[in-house]
Image 1 (spheres, one colour):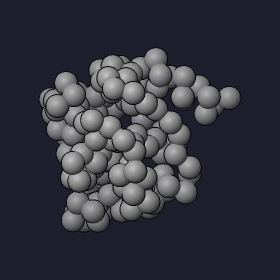
Image 2 (cartoon, one colour; image 1 turned 90 degrees about the vertical axis):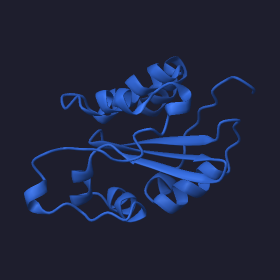
Image 3 (cartoon, rainbow, N blue to C red; image 1 turned 45 degrees about the vertical axis):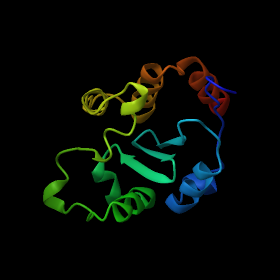
Image 4 (cartoon, rainbow, N blue to C red; image 1 turned 60 degrees about the vertical axis):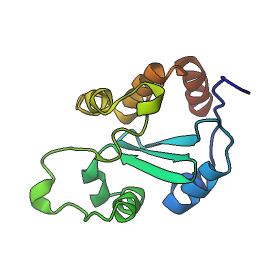
Length: 147
């Protein structure tokens, strides 16, 4: 509905494959486009946003590409290389940090969320949901997944 957040759960098969994830997000309605937040084992997360045909992606931790196919796919989409052994000591995000600028979470604020190295991916996503204004709905969906 207009002005309300609509949340749902995507099948695992979609969240394991970037192209399938992009296709699923494209099918969702929304005035400001649609997006998916994908938490992978509380290790890292991926955001995919499709807005007026434009695909934007964000990977919370580039080093996840060493162990996770979805992270590798994001790097390939961004035309970036998987980090080498010398680059694994530091965690850093890649992609569009301004993915939610128009919704009130600018690059600096996103950077602050992502720089909390003590936070798990689910905690970062909860913080993001709170800042975007849909934390209650987000927590209900997450709680339903855990039960």
